Image 1 (cartoon, rainbow, N blue to C red):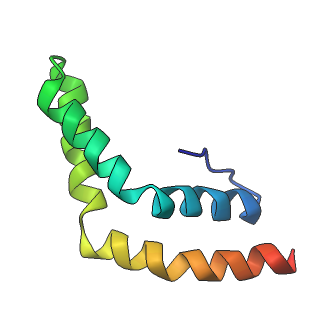
Image 2 (image 1 turned 135 degrees about the vertical axis):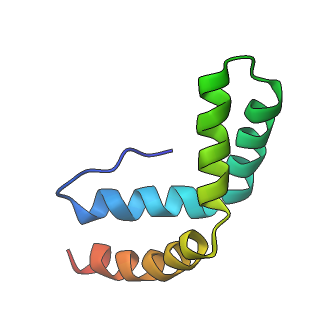
Length: 76
């Protein structure tokens, strides 16, 4: 996963692309960590991330922002 810069839209475009292109892999990894990790705090964070990644709002915004950010990237 990419870190997100506070000022550069190009970094945001890269981060959104990374999540969108690896969405299924992210879900698989988080589910595996959630099922096998022995640290309660890590499992709680995984459950929270899984919940957020599976929401309609997240998926909608991911699919909405990806082409917009790509256009901004080309212009800048």
